[in-house]
Image (spheres, rainbow, N blue to C red):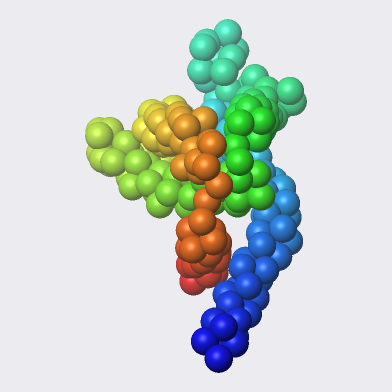
Length: 204
């Protein structure tokens, strides 16, 4: 009788484990690729806005040709400079993923870990760059001229983003998954549940 009861209890546990594994197998690759696309697109957008701030203003309002501001602006305003930071970030992230893939015992969850870190980077950077822009403007002499653009407005946002990228790469290199001992089913369920909660918060 006790064996029958234990068997009945084991069935839901086995079902839960199979559900978690199915979620990981289905969500992992899709969300990993999606987060990589979002990361690449985000860096491409901020590159044009912060490293080429004069690209959207008339030529007579831009720095003179030959100045370092104009040289940097023109490099990042057009290809290949405009795409270089985004591809560099993506290549570094994928390289770290492959390096971790060769060492990790939790390869299915590794996809979700990188997807989570990429998503967190974008969310945190978006939350910090707005105050960074405002603070940079407050440090300037007031009132600001109408239509005034340049690196004196974007430098702090650039510093914040570069700092967060360093933190992202360090987290991706170090990792939170065990290298030699497989993660328990409970830990896997918590990991997947945490990522699903993050996706839900992104929709709010």
